[in-house]
Length: 163
Image 1 (cartoon, rainbow, N blue to C red):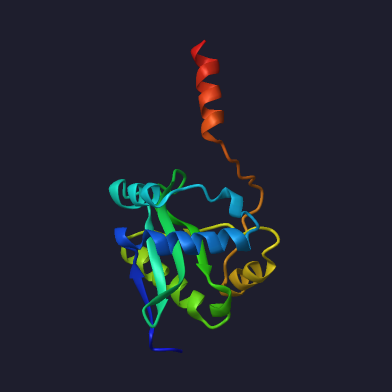
Image 2 (cartoon, rainbow, N blue to C red):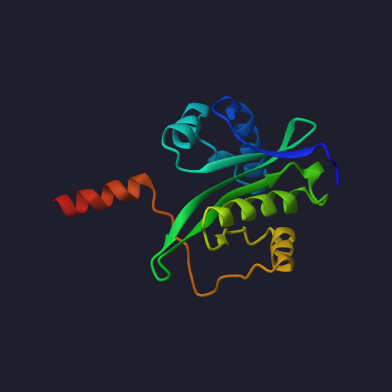
């Protein structure tokens, strides 16, 4: 493994690089039109509000991948877990063990902070990643459907109840 590989926390000055990597993920997921956040909005939520942790995976000081994750609470277990929102590497750096090293870094950090596990999702068509996660020992969650409730949906619900 390459000794020039490192992992570091993203800083407020890294927003252009982070956004570029997010665009790479969005293109990989066939959703580039969904990237609407600005660098200022990213900086606000990641650093002013401290809503999530962002990490860069770097090779020779250049960002080749990233991860964004945040804590979630399990009401049944009354314990904290961590949700990985994004984990992404540029295509030319996949299959070289860097993703495993980044995931292991996140595992070590969250266990040290007292969390009991990780969760994340993968798009159905991303079979390479799904197979990789299963080989690592991750389990597919069954019997659950995820929902997205937009700002507009929230506003409509509030308006409906407020009448």
